Length: 349
Image (cartoon, rainbow, N blue to C red; front, side, top):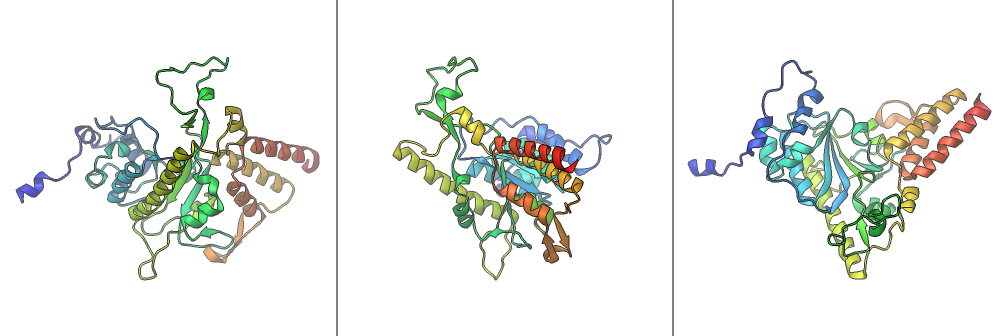
């Protein structure tokens, strides 16, 4: 028995420091209680500073209650090189012994993950989001698999590149790149936080609510057998991560052999014009459109009727769905803001 105990995974010293009891004067709600852990000092072993295979994808866990699922997901973030991990309103301590032990050399992910009160906060910097659910609601398109989803939206798998020379030019056009450290390729990965796709997973016992699914432009299920159709939370993340890692790796290897990615932004200006707007920017536009509808006497409810499957999507709900799914660009969002403003000024008022 003593030999077994010697092999129990123990957290690094820095993790022990952040397990101190919260100050009793601090607010007792779950966000305030657990957000103190995200600012902890990192363990000595941290993630290497290099491009990640899935750096365009952000994992989002909505209100998980089992620490082991959080720890296992942190390990999966490191396994498959996701951009980051966000936890929405956790119902447990993300740095409990169980979470840290199951993280296995990914404790730095637990320390740096963002803890936010709502799903909209987690999606604020994302340009798209995929909700994983088995429930198909009225008017909701749930893709039966990731293969089906990415066949319909192949651009989600295309990494975004910008010209290396353009990336290292300042506003005056002077190249400030260090020639000794410049990349051998003409193109380099656009590593900005602007273009992220969120992968949203729900609660262990009940999944995502209808409102949370509606907040995501896309929805997808994970194929399983009828004997036990429900997957464990961390297992679901593993299935999705493995599929994406394989597809992105294949694409990168193919591009390396063929001389580079073919579907790139040619210039930084082109990227700014064509890059999808964030979900937060689209929500601001949607709110303005709904306000215009209300002032014009048009029903701005997104759905009506009974609960769950008995509800039907209304005009406003279809407007939100189209704008979220279309991956409109920032310039297109600005144009639509101008349209709403002119209609409001000339017709409604």
